[in-house]
Length: 414
Image (cartoon, rainbow, N blue to C red; front, side):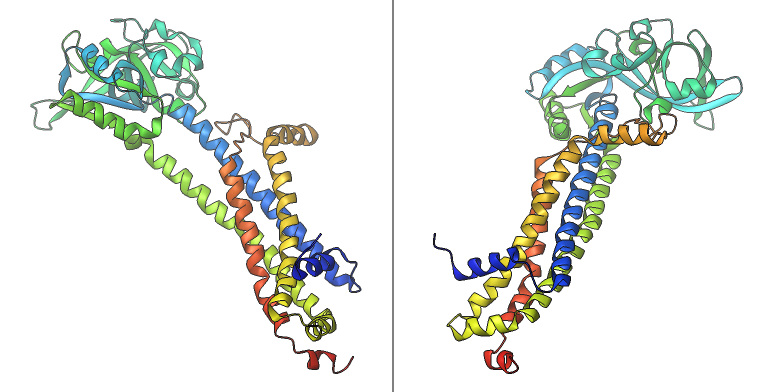
């Protein structure tokens, strides 16, 4: 089978047992370094994707994807819900209220963000019913001022079902200060645990009780909460729904409250990826060193090829092929091992925990007690492409030096 001269000689140089074992050792370390770099990047980015996906499902499963509110309280929220459900991205809608206050219990106080929800419809727009550890969401009955609190809040105040505590909310008034505190007695009817910071900052009331605290008329609600198919389209969808409803309606979405957290996670993933790319860059520099030593070792062979008619371009191609093969093997091995490790990282961490007797992610310290992994094909493609590109670029200078060798100079002392 016909093969170009550069590929034929370059692959033979790669397969041949060199007389200089040091050069062979440097080539091997270049492959191993490249493989480890690709392996580390795939595993770390997959774990970061897993954490981001886990946090997205927990946090964004609790907060509204989007909400529609009026300049004034909504007298008939079902009209707004029916209009929103006409949009193809809207999956479900439910009445919703939001207010901030302070919880007070036996001299202790804690700021809290309260959500007014309809217990019968809340399971359609959030994941709260899947994370109840005590009580039920249906226990939030109208007029009883029950509250469902997070597990961290319950642990901080040592609360249990049936305990009563005080809710203090600010209220505008005509007094000189402008704001007066208003107190409401509430009782604990449920405890949830989603494994995120919301366990310490969020509590749920019946939407009618929240309206009463906000001094609304019976039947009025503050807004309508929407659940979307693609939550990353929340700004566009909420704006479109509000525009269809006409004047007097405002739209908000999760990017206004939680967007900074996920932007920080995305930036962190990018920066860690760039730092890990330095491992691949170091391996690429090893390829440069390998090829420079090979060029010095093969000076006489290069001179003979030149005297037989090989062009500088063909000589350059020989060593470009050799370096590219090293990079290709290292990237392929690292890619395969990285994919296997990313798919089984949870099992590997569990095996290490059993072997060492130490828990890597303790549920008492971290919100997530296991190591999630989400392998994405685009990440693998980008990592392997970057490794191959760096490997190819590393071949240019040594190959150019080989093409500049003059036969007479190289053969003078042979």
